[in-house]
Image (cartoon, rainbow, N blue to C red; front, side, top):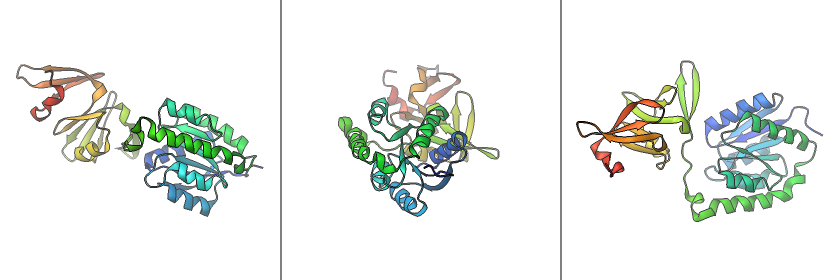
Length: 262
């Protein structure tokens, strides 16, 4: 029989992702009570033993102990939902298991489907799906070594926290056209808005995927797939045009080798 007020634990090494999931859960399942939040698998296991939640939402890739290893120690005590940023190949693999998954960033519509499944599962003991966990763990291991590259790829920044008055805005890195240093702040430019953050360009360069963002100037990081055109102006400078943005960006001489055809 379901708990009169179901409880849950959220584990993700990125605070913005925990915040987003908590907010989405409040919309989709108001009576669900979040009793604990963890930043890694080991912390999640310890908190699960302490708070005994009905459900655990676990990010798969976390520093130290990941979500699958944590789930191996938790599945007898609570229902497991994995959160994953893997591609469609991985999603299809996870659908073979009885344990649910959420593809990050989590949408309300997808979460509502998961909530409906969890409501039904709370009528049964977590042990009912224990046999599926070993299979799912094998799938996870297969995905980590697929092509020999996935396991070694670092977890890059996916969300930017930008202060807007008294509010905190969450900006996906997929929306960012470029970052540009501006005195004490760094300008975060999307196609529709501009935000200021306190992270330095050097910090951002270390945390962003180098295949997605290139430094084109000591003060500018640009999203590669936002580049529409590179041209030389009358002074011989390389200038970038971006899709969906009217202003051109200058490429410094030190970074001109990025566009050798010019």
